[in-house]
Amino acid sequence: MTSLAPVTLEVSDPEAAEAIYAAAFGLGDKVRFRASQTPTTGFRGFIMSLVVSQPSTVDSLIGTALDAGFTTLKPAKKSFWGYGGVIQAPDGTIWKVTTSQKKDTGPATREVDDVVLLLGVEDVKATKQFYVDRGVAVAKSFGSKYVEFATPGSSVKLALYGRRAAAKDAGVSPDGTGSHRIVIGSNAGTFTDPNGFAWEMV
Image (cartoon, rainbow, N blue to C red; front, side, top):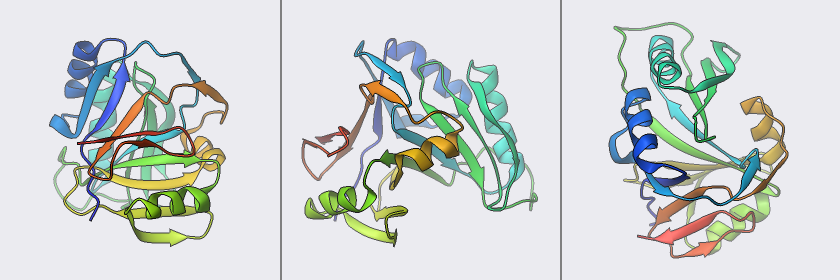
């Protein structure tokens, strides 16, 4: 069964990024950093998502992230699906902090239930098949709309969404060029997917 390692974000200053993320979210080793000056513009085609238990946790994490230098793309608010907001790190990575709950059910915490890497891809079905052919099992699939993969024991979950839908969800234009500036570590091998996302064997 395929498992994912912590994702690696490519940033201009890894030490500064590590300090910023520690202050913002306190995710420990679920996200790693390495130096890169590779050109990138606009939407990089992915969203990192923190799934938490209740709105007060969303507010707490977004609050410390903004204090650490993140900026707001979509303010936290209630929606049909729950409660959440979208912010952007100084390195350009887009983060969504969300819960399926609309009301707090207990004391405020900063506990993150899941870290999800959502890839915005041009062709969801084709990308899903590419991953399946490399041994990545599907957990949930909604046709050409959304796919969630089974990666038991992994610190990060993986999902696919259409690129335009992902950009709309993040509140940004779908346009973008250059490097994604993210590397997905796994035991599935070293390869580049049809959308240019790099995987490395770990």
